[in-house]
Amino acid sequence: MGSGQFSALGVLHVHGPLTLTELSEFERVTPPSMTRTVKCLVDAGLVTRTDSALDGRKIVLSTTDAARAMMTETRKRRDAWLVQRVAQLSPEQRRTLADATLIMKELADS
Image (tube, rainbow, N blue to C red; front, side, top):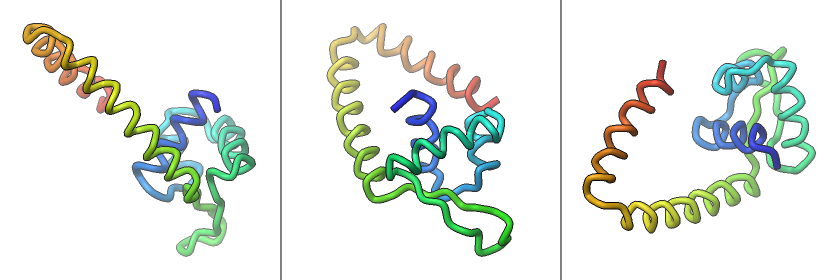
């Protein structure tokens, strides 16, 4: 799975069912580009497409049980790795990292 596919899957996992347009906006890519990404995820059995209850012209994308299990396991492994690595940093490095985290969050939210 490519990084774009994994990122889109992560957005669906965290934010719940979304339309293609909503997912494209989260990922800051064009809908045609996201269509290709979603097709790969559907073909892999990680995302389902269903008709929108609010607008029959729209399709809602959702993660499957397999995708949710994969994302949960990936998060557990990533978090365990990160906790180990941060514990090895000096107090000064941890302060710098905390400051940088706030700056990165501001950038991501802009």
